[in-house]
Length: 304
Image 1: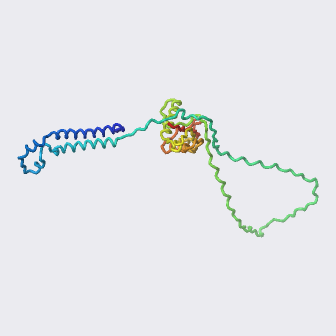
Image 2: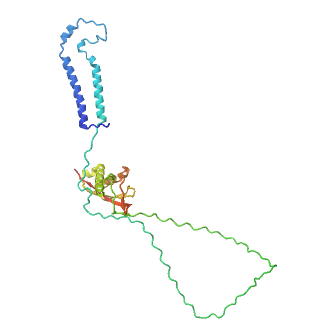
Image 3: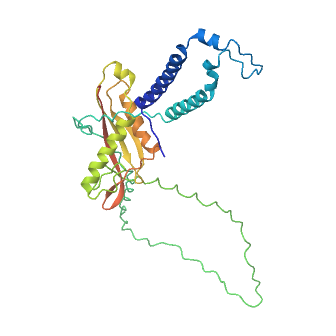
């Protein structure tokens, strides 16, 4: 069973234990402070006890050692309550402050979307053949071919030609592999990516509104106002751009608008913290297939 004590309740328990202890001390002081010492002396003037354990006190009526067990039990119970209150002392943060229109951008931001690699252009066509004119001169004189008798008979000795050594040339190297194809990054998709935590909603509009609220709660619960910006009164909106991958991870985060004082770096830190916190987005879809989508996140810094 989880038990949580707030600061006020813990202080109330410790204060009650202290008041109870002071009350017990006051009661015993009142009880033993009104006893007449002269009467005690006359009452026990003739006592001569030989037992050291019984006669260790001069006046048994004011022997406070007989309450040792009671004091010990009270101290143990009080210590136990203090330990329980200290171990279960829980502090609660104030509600997350989300500025008005936190996801709105007051001016248009032009971003250069990285283009996918285009294939190289085809080689130019070969030049057309050049037609040369044949001279009209008729060649009349030409050498007659010489015919060699190549007939053989049974007595003709036939020898196979001697093989000639052929030098083997190494095969040409394989062509380089084609460069990896970069997938297109969409700025606007049919289904834009959503922050996780709203998959149980019924309609698409409800999921989008819930995802926006979850995103704002995550951002402003983890953002820390930079000390330099706070001291110099820096306020404004910084914008961080990132790409939501097909598996929901956040990549290529960068600052596209900075207001100074370290606000942009702080917003970038919170965005990159999504992957470490296990916050996987619902990826955007185009024609029913997950695609890479660029997302612009405005983060407003406002001093309270």
